[in-house]
Image (cartoon, rainbow, N blue to C red; front, side, top):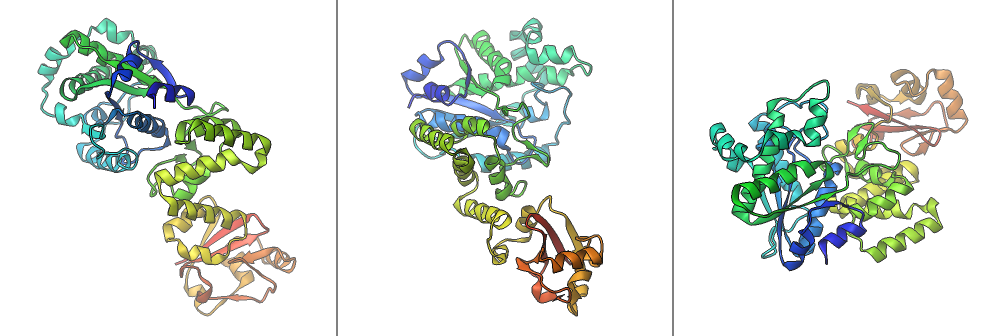
Length: 427
């Protein structure tokens, strides 16, 4: 497999430094990508870089994943309009541990000569004094060179300006490349297209400091066809950590992509080969309403980020909300999963004491909760056959509910019509 050709046909390649392809064709190359430890989990915005590393390793090269324990204390100004809050060392260490666990799902750290490696730039910066840094690194890169970078020009010309801390970021990242080149024979840095300026600062430092040669590849920044930001929903980031974004929500994120986006994402975020993808595209174009691309994309990526069991649970959750899966399925879910499944659904709190001696369904839906605005509305809908609790149609306004009706000893699921769900939580 040719790494650069793989990126090209998948639509991932953005910039490549002259000589890079020739280097990669000579034999195994060590290359790295940096990951920003601003949280204890990566999100789907990081997946393009993870996929780049997967393809790199599959092509026979050695990937280094650099987690920025030191650069996380500084903050990358690329693409930012304001300086971000700096993290404490304690929080950074927690974040680094979470990211490491996630990357180990995707890369092979025990496969011989091209085994993936993880490094933390805090290890080589923690004892690097400021005076030694500006003497040994700063003297090789001119201010003119640094000022010419778009990430610097955009900020200096803006309202907020740029602190010296952020201005120095490209030197710090440049030294990362130099250190890995010097100590790990790492001759290639990869990253998103917004990282080009920082990456070439590293190649320039290697050239000026030691007369060495290093190379760069950047990939396209992922955008949605409608121009909105990829990886964001109304609820915020889509995380790889199941505790932050449930596998059900994760699956739904990919399932709900537009046709245009699905055609782009299935090339970038799956490992399907070209023939498989082209076959899926043909099937999708023949019957778009079946959402063949979205389903294939969501399945593949949910299984790789989580696992097959979580994918199956996500399917059942989807079928429960939009199909006829029985209420017993909810007994397979824990509290967090149930509440995630009904995230965005109106929910009401009642006390278990209200259920001990039984509560009339009309009082339950119109007094203890506000599923209906009045008892009259509740009675009318019940008599019309439009009210369901725990998948059972309510046929009588005199029906009673008690503790025995609770799912997981805590929940009642009410429906008003087919699509309007309400979660009643008894505590």
